[in-house]
Amino acid sequence: MITTTAPKILALDFDGVICNGLKEYFQTTLRTYQKIWSDHSQNNLQTWADSFYQLRPVIETGWEMPILLRALVLEYDKDNIESNWHQICSEIVEKENLNKQQVMSELDGVRDHWIKSDLDNWLALHEFYPGVLEKLGQLLDSSPLLYIVTTKEGRFVKQLLKQQNLSFPEGHIFGKEVKQPKYETLRQILKDNQESPNNLWFIEDLLKTLKTVQTQSDLREVKLFLADWGYNTSKTHEIVKEDNTISLLSLEKFSQDFSQWIHF
Ligand SMILES: [Mg+2]
Image (cartoon, rainbow, N blue to C red):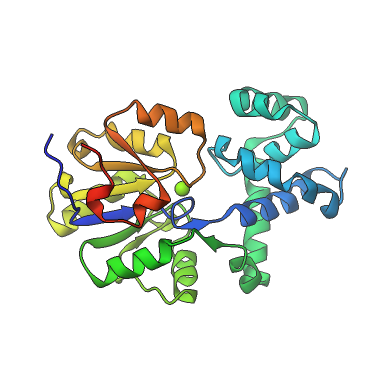
């Protein structure tokens, strides 16, 4: 496979690559928890914050977050949570007679209400990873074309970047509102720019998402990077190190030239 040493198009995920949303996740989770269970006060629940941050990579969909906090409250062993999350999650859902859809709608409701009632306070819970904004600023002033492909609402991404004085070109932020899988968005970006897949590089922190891009035969040449600073574990890093179709990227390398991103 021919790999270019610089992309013509660089697409980035937002949460876990550009922005650290762990505080927001936890605070939204904590409020949702209290709607489902009334056994602990906010202050009390706050003590599980660090364990929650540490274990956040096990979460695949938002509704699992309150269940993760429940697992911590119920004193499930942290190593066990990391290795057997899906099993533990179903166990709690079953034992406590919960409904996935209901938990999800409680969580969405909490978040929507918060955004509507105190947007600034909600936005302030988002932090940017060190050096990332500077790098994006440099890249926006030069080539390649930059895109954000995220499952967060695009308007919030725009607002968060605007607060940091970064503005992406119109139409370069694809959020939740496009209602299509990320690989479909990547395909659309290539089509819009009439570029071939090997000129597109994509950075993401969820291995599963990179894997679904790989299953698309027309996107096989897209260069894939797993951001090791995002919501993933050292176990995932080991898997990626063995996989020569995905490159493991560190924050330090991200700040350097594209030629440093891949080892041949
Ligand atoms: Mg992400």
